[in-house]
Length: 94
Image (cartoon, rainbow, N blue to C red; front, side, top):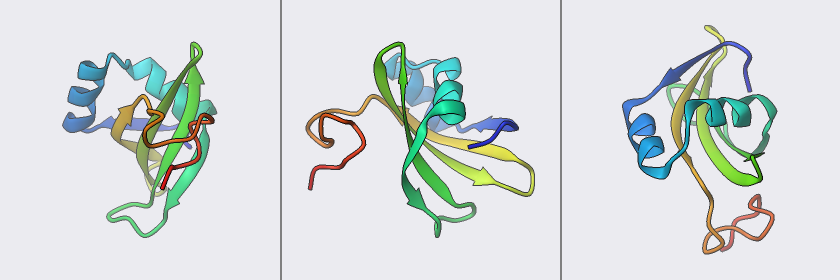
């Protein structure tokens, strides 16, 4: 998503701590994960849901990209469950 700076939202840091997800894991998903959903109309910045495997564990990161400052705003991060995603962890169950 970006090689620039990252802004960590308080909510994201709190949820990451509760879920046992580190900043370095989130950075890895941002740098090498795949965008699985785009939210181009989100405000104040377009955002996306990224998925990556970190140490064999699937992780999802929702981040908004401020292209003017080359900064990613981390909204949340979580380990996807099979109750909401298919076994590929990329496809939503509806």
